[in-house]
Length: 267
Length: 231
Image (cartoon, rainbow over the protein chains, first blue to last red):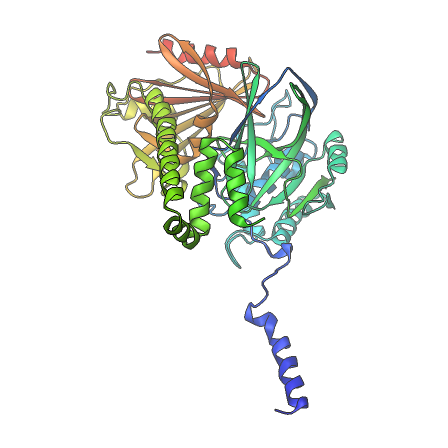
């Protein structure tokens, strides 16, 4: 093979490569989010014995978020559930987002997941996000476009503002968003959620694994400072609406890897 | 630092449960290495076997004891609730369906004798979900939510037979680390980011009561007492 033919062959191979599924380092945008369930990890506990404890911050959006979870027929539907939580949250302020139904009681408490209206919302978003059409679950773009199309079709605008990605989550911007009563959507890989239990002046922190790439809604932050016998430590978490039925809210550790995070504004 | 050294260091730094987990992970990731390593170092193999045995015993005790505590009445059930084999169902083995009947109606129509909140007169917005086995259509559990306007709270009651474990309750059971005795029933409870939850068993059934944030454990105990009063 002469030099010209060799160059042509290499060029041809390079052109074909994207169509052969040969990329091993696909961008994060191409991740699929399928949900899964919260898996109890029986050995992942840490006990923090402290001299004193101070909750430095415990801030949430107003009344946190609605508690919605997937129902039968919504396989890999974590995108639709997270989208519905966002829509339900904002329905309190923009009443036509869920037509003919208010997502909250007069006290401000979010209403129970309704078998008619919320179920209709869930399946509408499930379809708009093209869940399981191209591959199981949804991509970031499918989620974002599906949710936006729903909001626009109901007469409102939606903006996504990036809060960082990877290990560069912008915690400061996130706190500002929460302080302004704006939730955020998180795209995460298989990772841990945390729960706290205080027993006899000790905090037991349990880590539970999310069974797959997942989409959650972050609605607050929690910072706690411990005075220990050998110094101090401060733990910082996001409060997240998980979309799971029994563990509808949990902590996500600041510093954990996120594929992407967006503040969601509807107006 | 070699992978082996990193793991050994991690083992030394952690407790027994974590140790066994790391060893399991090591076996999973590097089965060839572990086998070879064991063949080369018989002394290390004996030590490994000893540690594994201890870890296994500890893990077994850690699993069996909570199960024994959580199943105090499993042989005293009605509806054969406690006399059947333990059945563990993963999420993909059952589905959750909204149903038009209430838990109270289900109980009456199916001659079941579990406890339930008779809140239909003063509550609002009842939402009932049925957990149904995909394999045999058996009803594995029921869940009902109600809004109680007087206290502005959403209360959720979930019921399964004592011998049935649904995977979505695993974390809840694990997180309920506090204990309280109410009317001779051992109640385990927890307070999490947004919810307070408790679990107890009675006469072959397991009950999960969950209320929204803002309430404390005393409200949970009131609800347990209220439920037990309906016996």
